[in-house]
Length: 567
Image 1: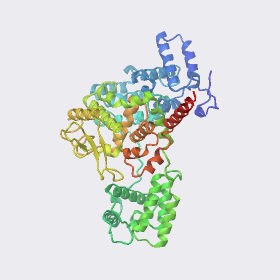
Image 2 (image 1 turned 135 degrees about the vertical axis):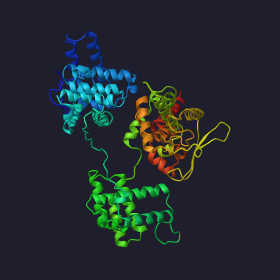
Image 3 (image 1 turned 180 degrees about the horizontal axis):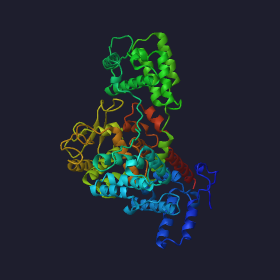
Image 4 (image 1 turned 60 degrees about the horizontal axis):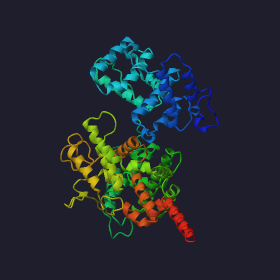
């Protein structure tokens, strides 16, 4: 057998004697108990999965924990196959592993269930509830196999189920499947009268760090409100303090950071009732205690947020008129947690852009909005999901033509931000209050993007929002714009599923500059204007090096031209 080689660090934690895909293929080739066609399909699935992982079958272990996270990162589009073909390949590979007992065999027959579970499952099927059946199916069969009666199911059994999923699941996230099953169980308790009355606990994944405002004293909240008013309405005649009014978004950020720091102090053991003023937060010993508490959450690594909080507390020492000794200590503490300014893009973003430099991959992204809009993704879609796909297509189309920040994209108001002079043209206009650095920016929307927007607006109601909703990307009740983070996640998932590349919303800005600098090496001033940066130096700092390929190509052409003169 081709056992795991321990000098391969990628498989350092795979148990000894774990068989490889090549061993499975050999076993199947010698198996006489299965239909020849079924054996062929399973072997094909193993080989296709190995190829997708970029490994030979003898280098792929039959180990669920190793396979699952790696297969989760694979997009069938990047392999040039349909999603259904990829699902079939993974299913065939899993069936091969189940056939030899490496993972559990999935069951679908009601006769496999204990009588008590058979009765309950018949009830689920009869309910025609689209939520319960897919999420509960595997969980019910698992509990039945354990020999448990429905009324005996407890939290202990859910943990056993999660461990089984981790060991056996290779195509989907075990944690997602686990949480879906428990949510469906608790939903069945509410919807099906005969279902066991036991609610299964599901731990909250959200780590609550920032306390609610009303947990702090009235005195602290009043002091905080006065500080925010002072920052919004500074005294121009004051000798010290804030000289310029801060923008509403900046004030919101400062307020969140102050509440977050006060919350960290409470987590560090400071009684909440002792936090009764801003001055309490600015005592050097208290500042150090709070910053140390924040560092415990990051393994003592200084993050951008910690650095910003340290700088804010230092500035508040000056603004609130603390004594010189206090201000000096606050400056020292802020310097200790100051992060180095970012120089250029992160390596992750550079890696993602490098993939997009491939002409076919780039073209797939550029044509993606039209493809999604006119031909929704595979599968049976209801009117709502079709409209949702079109909305995502509109968002991607705008980002390709207008590399704006996700906050500005999510907040597009049809009357305020999209201006139509009446000659068929349309402009995306962002004024000073809209953008991060208070520099207005304007884009003329391409005609195909305008047509896409108009077609979507004409058909989105009532599935997406009420008629007359003024937001391009609204919440479902139409009362306000969608949360930027939600739209960003949708864009990222849509691009991954349909184009097979990792592109988040902000990467579209890098993608725009990459294309511009590739065509115009050194054209940083236009790139600055395109992104709305305040200074060209910032644009150069972020994107220097992106034009290296075109610059070196131009230099090579120059040398060849000079050499040609001698001929």
